[in-house]
Length: 561
Image (tube, rainbow, N blue to C red; front, side, top):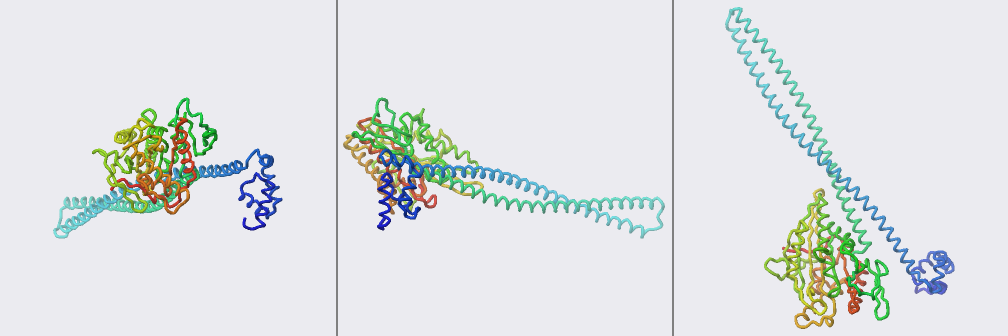
């Protein structure tokens, strides 16, 4: 654009087509047409036709057309990746069945070899026994023939008796010789069969090793394809959910599943998210949108689900729910356990822990001796919480009992905004450790479920004394969270994770190849309009963030010594 000739060409196209606002599109078209403005103008008319004339008359904007084209390309790429993923999964299943068949055949050969060895040992024992008997018979013949040479004459009866015994001994000797020959031949056949069995076992072992390597590669490719599919959708996904309140919320409009309009001071502000849930949406429908990243946790990626918004906007209902309508927490851990049980070839160990961040202090909610204050330790990108209580969970009943016990210890208080307001950030952490029985690959990941405290301004809560200190600590940590998102958005070399205990603990879930889902909860009450706009602006800025792409599992949370 600094070259006068180029600038003149761009301005010429811009004057002819004022609706074309993207200078990059004009430059690309000029390069394609050898910097001929007239040819570029003709090309745009050929591409957009009547819609371009409408835009010249001020009736339309081309930006949705370009956006629709980009969305179509991305959807096409997602469709291709999904198809490749399904093919890889079917190939992986076929290889797993073949591997299982070869394992069974290997065990069969080992058992058969053992039986043949036992039979060879038995035949060798019989062979030694028969050779011993032959030796004894020969020595007996010598002892019988010697008296014939020593004593004479013999009477006829004795001589006949000796001849009969000699014939019987000869017959017995012949029978033993035939039996020994047959035994040796059978031993030789067994040895040949044993040798061929050993050769087959070696080839089977080699083939099994090749299949194991192929299986490991296919499993890794499946994970990478699935991860690539999630990255196209966004490593940080932002959902907006409005609380259900009959008779309120006329200032809110929901034109589509991805947009929300807010009528603020006579002006309509449009906000766009990955998903916008109507107030009537059920807990089941809300949870279905988080299912893809839950599977990523089982594959070894750190996953975090956050609920952000003012007090009374429905954060706790979205995350915790109630007995009849459980929220994201119970459903996520339930789904994760189901996937772990389905993958029989991988041995998983799942442990849960609960903590709260109250007044910039970390407290263990599962401690049997009451709330226990903890300290955070860091080494590189690894965050540890020494002494944090962990409970192994195997069933949904274990989940409910553990979370119910931890909720009893959470800090709540009454404010003007809510009669039972959470005065702390609640974090439920599930660690998943898996060992693949076929490939031996070990995976470690965490699922972090965070119910943030209310984000409203102190002036609205009219807090004083202890409540004022709590509100100040909450706003400080939420401000630090916003600073972290801002640094990630700008791809800053330094991300201020350690500005608060909240962001310090969330570092493994907001860096590397971690997957995050943020629920922006809003209130439909007109008196909360200011806080609603503030929450929507916060969520809209998060959606533009893309996490980095280093090697997986570069950071993690370790829950104890």
